[in-house]
Length: 425
Figure 1 (cartoon, rainbow, N blue to C red):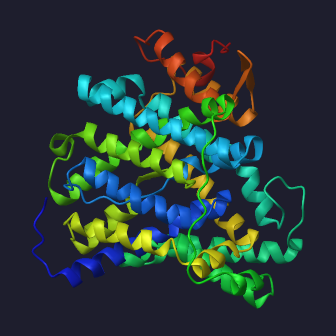
Figure 2: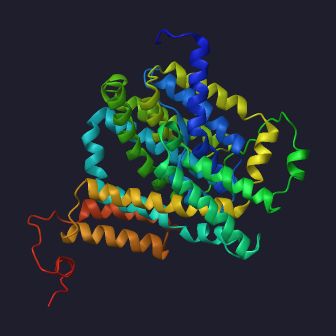
Figure 3: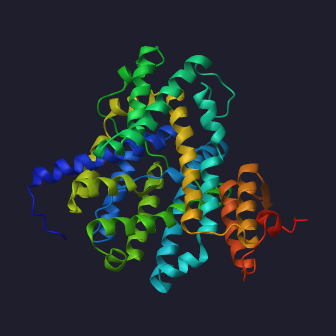
């Protein structure tokens, strides 16, 4: 356990600041997916404490709601219901545990060989673009499936446009710690505009109690939801490695050695399982918190303990939960358009940074098939269970990477894409 050298009040203040930095993204995930924001706060707080226990409180990391699961949660909830979705998310957490064990036995290099950038990149892109239509429908004032009109078209576009513009402006123009709050800024401005336009129903806020115990959602076992959700954890699990390396670069310590990447992966996986057990979204390491740690130079992991405790306490404020759930759909739709596109861009960036040569037939086949399978909506029935979306893409990408022969020489041609597929004249 690390001895705290700074006053307790300063630790608590720094912890509150960390939670504030992570807050926008943390509660955005349940708002977008229809989950209970209080459960997200509770899951993040308990999950962070579990992570600290597993890593012996040596890593200054806060776990918040994972964006990678937004689109899968929306689809799964609409298809199989919330309890089955929680069951799928609980099992998805076991992928972290499996990877933790493999890292312990074989080292980090084994994971990169099994899931290189050419596998992870297109999967992330599918996660971002798979439900882009949901964001567009909400921005136009409809429900995510586009069947019900919630807000008049012109009004909805105005609110969505203002929310989107605010988020983009803060992300590109803000300075210091404020640049870490683009989503929260977009929600705040969009919400204020919605209030002025009479789009916010205050009756539920008035009826909500000040203190309320969050409603737990028990997971149910559903093979379809499990097979769909399990591969989704591939992307955030790989991202976990990068986040641990990044926070180590900020603090000047190698956390992959001590406490060890297998311990950090184990802590993240146990936290995901715990969040699903109580009905909250999966949690993951937060880049926003790494940025805040870099700016504030608060390297003491005890600060994350305070942030986790504050998150747990806020989960019991009923009025706060009601306010979050009163945010109109166009506000979320405007932000989701940027958010889903950003996730897809991360997948593209993964390919670029790893210098994946798309002139090589092998890489072109893997990326092309994964994108078409995912965005095109291909569904395959295996033993009575349907594989589609991210689940199908995850399995297909790994199998293609293992089965396709390695390229020996790069293709040199004036039309490399055509040559790679054997279509050149």
